[in-house]
Image (cartoon, rainbow, N blue to C red; front, side, top):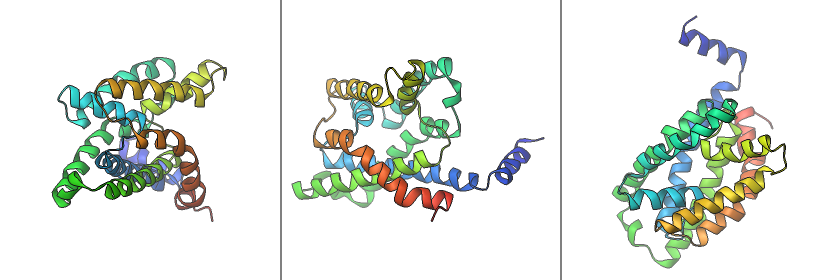
Length: 221
């Protein structure tokens, strides 16, 4: 059986699969847009992107290349410890998310050059909209249930390998703290946006999941 036949069979076996594939692709487009809105706010970004923006700036790399490089490093322990976390969504997150952020940045600068010189009020609006967009995209990404990026998988693997002695939330706090400090060391902005994402992501993602994305993807009305 060829690859196309296998894909067609998978779609027939799971009627939600097509919507989930579309959802995870759209989710990364949304996430990439949100990251750039927060970037233009100059109030900082979530811990992972805070780290990546700092690293890419320090070493003169474009953001997309830096993300792919770090993801290739992070995937090694996941490949060794638990390959079940590596799925279609993992590959999309590893290789598409970073370049999409770069593309959105160029598009926004081209069509809205004033974003580079917004007022304080404009920055606050960009921050609020950026947080909402990122959380909506994260909710859609998780709802697709097609795997997760290496950074997101680390916390779950720690919980699994420690038999819940270190739950995911604590493992994620440690990972986010390391990322934030790393971003700060490399000159990234650690500000209101960083702490807003650290504290507000969970509740907003749950809200979007329960009220919008799960209903869209799985037709739960």
